[in-house]
Structure formats: C-alpha cells, structure tokens
Amino acid sequence: MGDRKHKTWREPLDDKWVRALLHGRVPHDEKGSISAYTLLHTAREAYMDALRVAREKLAEHPLVEVAAQEAAKREGRRGHPSIVIDDNGSVVLEVHYGSKPTSSPKPKKDVSATKKSKLPTLDELRKQAEEAGVDISDLGRAKRLIMARIAEGPAAPPKPKMTKTAPAIGPVRLVSPPPPPPPKEEEEEPEPASKPKKKKSLAAMAAEGAAQADDMLDDFFASLEDIE
Image 1 (cartoon, helix red, strand yellow):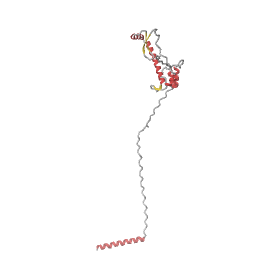
Image 2: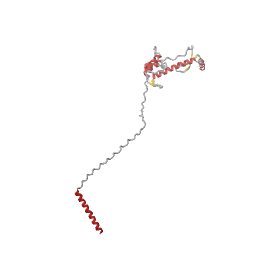
Image 3: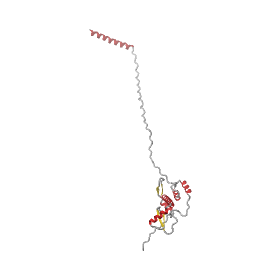
Image 4: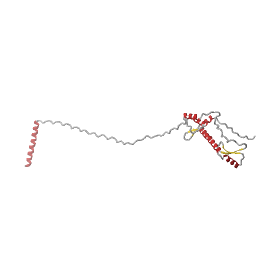
C-alpha cells in the first residue's frame, strides 16, 4: 500500500476554553497588565481593520490594473491578472484562468465569532464599562474585546512602594548649663560671752597694794646698793 497523505483537521476551540487557557497576564504599555486573551484579540482586531483599509486603498488606485497586467507579462502568465492583499498581509499577483473574478477576495471571518449572536451596541458597552470602572479607550470599536475587558473587571492598582522617611531635624540649639549656686557664707560663731569679773574686796586690794609697795621698796634699796 502506498503512503497516505496526512491531513490536518481544525476546528475553532470553544471561546470559554480559550479564555481559560489565555488567562495569564502580560505587561501592556503604561496601563499595567492585560490577559493574553485580550492582547491576542486586540492585535487581531487591529490587523483586520488595517487589512480592510489597505485593500480599499489598493482597489481605489487608478494604476492597479495596469500594474497587474505588466507584472503578469513579465512573469509570462496569461489570464486575468490582479493585485490583491492576502490574509497574511502580503501583496501578491493573482492570475485567474477562465472567467474573470468580480471582486477581490474577502478576508476570512473571525473564527471566534459566535454564530447567530446579537451583541450589545457600543453605547451600551461604553455605559457598562463606565459603571464598572473599566478603561476601554484602547479597544476602539471591537465589541468582543470590550466585553472581555468588562468581564475581567478593573485592573488592580499598583502597590505603592514603601519608603522610609527620616525624621526632620530642626536647627540645633545650644543650651548652656545653669550657673552653679553661690557658696553659702559661713556663719561666724558668736564669741562666748566673757564671764563677769568678780569684784575684789577692800581687804584684798589693801593686801595687794601693800605687796606692791614692798616690791617697790625692795627695788629702791637694791638700786642704792648698786650706786655705792
């Protein structure tokens, strides 16, 4: 038996599973962080809008058909040439054989869109976001991304950094010590009162006078002897 060709089958995953698997948060500009689901869908919505605008501008160019015929001629291709932008964003030359295509190929439909679902209007979503305190200014008109942002709720504010503040030091004031107390003056002790002298009697005074007179006489006679 010959080798069979390998085929790959793909089917869009349920959006609930996608949200759960891409719930991890990633840094995003100055607004903190967003989930990988929101980041992916924001980028895809922006890419689809850019692809649509580029295809419109290409179709409006007056020389696009002339350029397609000249490019096909250089490649040696016959048929109905056209220049288109594929789903990957590459500008390519397409040559159709048989009937001429009526319009440029349309971009693939977003596989995450739910079939037969009616989404709320932008005004309703903006009102819900305002009531929930969610910023959706960066999502434009992408309704599903706005709904996902509202479901996630407002981003948690960053934790303030704890900084230690040194106490304020005012001007230094020099305080002189108080002067020492004056020394206590020593109180002079009062001199003891002298005892009153006893008055001498007349007899004692007479005896004292007689004794002095005898002494004077002795001294007188002694002096006479010295003269002799």
